[in-house]
Length: 286
Image (cartoon, rainbow, N blue to C red; front, top):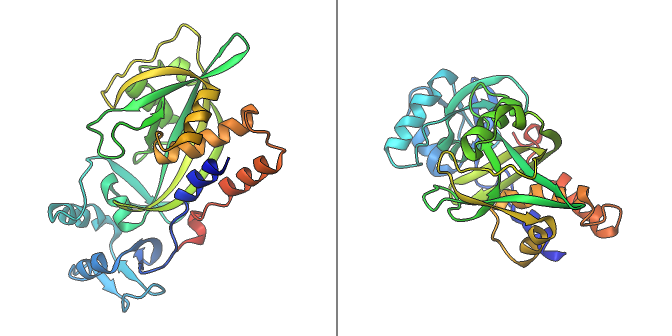
């Protein structure tokens, strides 16, 4: 089971502040920026520079300017514009301080939230899992294995609303069927990625689907779907990195709840503790 702990450790690589400077919105700590980005931001007249240290940081005095500031940085090639606005909060579930393009979140070190859905089928006393393969044109992790439904929570949406929207867009799951999904876990992580600092909160759901339902790649984000015995998914996690990095966390939680890994064993308890011990609690970071 060492491979499962490795998957969790891969998502625990953020060590803050490290080299980063605190980034504030209207005096409220919300993110972290690297020194090169801090230097660029200080050229903007809307930024108050408090000596650019991790404790004092940089303050965007008018948070409403954030989308335009991010657009300028994208035009300079500092990140890839995604064309989807996300809410920015100082703490998960807290008040919305601003909105910004999804592509800018890791550069600013802002927290983000998403939904992940375990698409499950009961057949002959065994549980099966719908597995998607990401299309090769995806900007992140092309070709990796993924959940039947997963997506970031866009500005103004709740986790439940995002689930319904993404289920229709990604797998052609009708809203009446998607609404049967049951919230089962919340998983946090904070990790260094090529695109920057990922501070994510995943709202995890189980959705048991009828045996005769076949998901369809409605928006082209996935290349197709396969129905696997749950044990086969565990074997793939144990063997390597075929699944998208954060999908591994949600699946480990699923394996524990479904009993493929005994949750009361020493290994099960350590896995539970590792999942719960992620370093991404938003309230603790800024």
